[in-house]
Length: 106
Length: 159
Image (cartoon, rainbow over all chains, first blue to last red; front, side, top):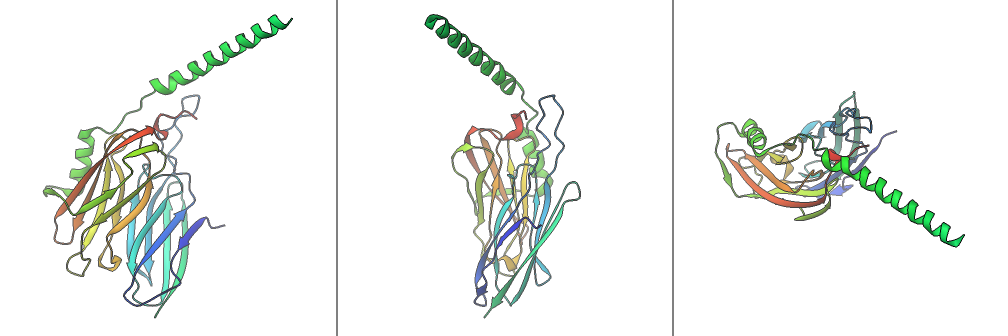
């Protein structure tokens, strides 16, 4: 079950700047909260996000506990050619999720 | 009979109110370590090294008054043509009073087309947020914004 939401325009003109919106379902536990008995809740966050466009990395982010739960990241890219976007989220406790979206460039 | 009913109701309300006050006290007194202006400066030094940071070019959009610090929309943009010679390499966002000074590092390139990134952040207190952009020519540009938070994010929360 993938828990990612991706919004990439299906079509674009060559050279257009397109907006990409991504959301990954994740608790983003900061590691600073405590239970009622005083124990620290261990940190569990996504630490890294990247986006590749036909295999070439166009955007990457390092995330910290100050990013809200269910990290929502939007950024832009230039539509150069038809192809595929690959998204990857990597985090604590072996968290690793991928998603992809395709685009037709005219 | 009626009189007795009323007194138990009053007692109950009194007890409930007392319990609520007792419950609230530890939340207020538990103050975890927070990033200080010194750790903020150190985190910025980690990124920029010895380079000078100038003010300008960067725009940070955060609501000036935030009701819920758990999720605060934030948009950073940099005035840059984003050509192969003149583009934004990275954008780094810092805060003053969360437990950690870093919020996020975003690595862009000329293929991004527009130097703008949006996300949602957490703010543990009313504080200053700093965004720094690293340009292709090696220069650093910054902006800082003050945000007032009425309900702080998780750091103080007991679950």
